[in-house]
Image (cartoon, rainbow, N blue to C red; front, side):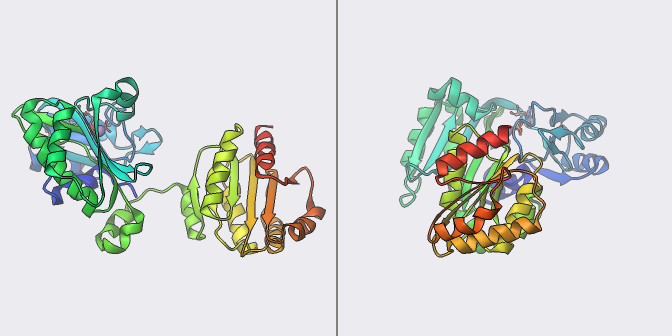
Length: 380
Ligand code: GDP
Ligand code: MN
């Protein structure tokens, strides 16, 4: 679950990380009232869960009430990369001397946490990584040992920030590490981490992703959950109890088991197709589950062809085939479907599907062939 900047900053503040004083508001009048309380100059910041707000005109410095009114009015309703601004964060403006980048995230392949720190902050880190990779100092933190003071100092020194920022950066990164671990975050990112003109190190932005699986030990995260903006497709899928992640391609994917669903997404990409989603229907593939899955997929206007990839195990192939046929009778599907059904009772399953085979419903015996056919159909 991703947090808004203001929520990230409120979380950071609990760990004593210096952030600017501010208020979240939903209207122009409330923005001016908040700015009057906070004191000018203020920064008017669009609250949307997407980066690059500054470049898109979603961040403005206001030195008086008139400017604040003007900017709040401009930014509310602004469309930033498809996210329409409905909420603003008004905070005390900072005087910036330098902008840095800092983050902790999980490096799955190293089985460690990865810390990144760069003197080249303020711009997107992907751009720094591409154009100037040696400008990012990286450390891998062992989850058992944690970030030691020695390691943190060496890391900050390697990043070659302004020496005036060294102690402040060590302090903030130590607290950021605590926050990352104790709050069960998958990502904590400060971009920019600034050195102010009066020599303080301060978090000017906050990007936080929390691990949804940790909600049980953070009852207070309910409030974050309530403010989540979800993809309409994902909301519909989750209501049906399906594990669904929306993507932006044209091949709808239904598979049983998360591993198979991921492999299906991969293989479609490999053969040149573009997956519209990840969808794991889990162990059961009865008519109800299959109906729900097909409804979610066909509601996505980008879907041009559907790939049903099932490996029968506990759920037997004949049951799956019956489920698919029943679902086809319930859902009105325009897109062609390609089925690959393997595993337990696959032959019985194929026999059940055989009478329904047509241009609209094809069966392929391997995952690779099915991926190729469905990709062709999606492009047709
Ligand atoms: P993002 O564009 O979505 O990453 O939004 P940020 O919160 O990172 O702000 C973008 C940029 O706006 C920063 O890199 C700063 O250059 C500028 N900015 C943000 N807050 C302030 C502020 O308090 N004072 C000044 N002078 N500039 C700011
Ligand atoms: Mn930023």
